[in-house]
Amino acid sequence: MKRCLVIDDSRPIRLVACRILAALSFDAEEAADGAAGLAACGRAMPDVILLDWRLPDLDSIGFLRTLRRRNGGAVPAVIFCTTENDVVRIAGAVDAGVDEYLMKPFDRGDIESVLAGMGLLGSADDGSPLGGDMTTKSRGDIDQNQ
View 1 (spheres, rainbow, N blue to C red):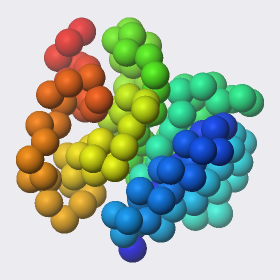
View 2 (view 1 turned 180 degrees about the vertical axis):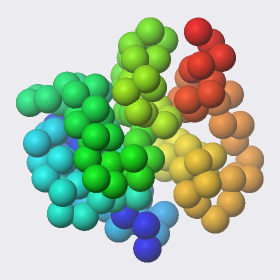
View 3 (view 1 turned 60 degrees about the vertical axis):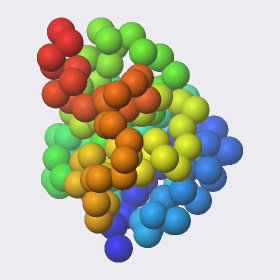
């Protein structure tokens, strides 16, 4: 079973994301801030990280840079979860190591689509056009838009 770490200071967002991930056959773990997220990665590196843009203790770019420098830190696919669609800021996250981004609020279809598009689910053919709107974008989409 694949493991996903959900890092968000909003408990309701963490609970919803973990329920969705469990329904998609992921073992989901929660962290309320960047320090707790890095500690969780130190115990066992997840396959996927859903990372909130605004963390209370550590900015998400700092989290990413720290994660990517760690042993095994290049392994997790990192999905940046944000309410902002500023291409410059998202491009900065991509430069720091984000693999995808997901606009909040999200639902099961949004998470399922991005995970499938990354090859982390059984089938990427779920009928929804990955990247067809501002809900999900890949690193390649951001690079092409610069």
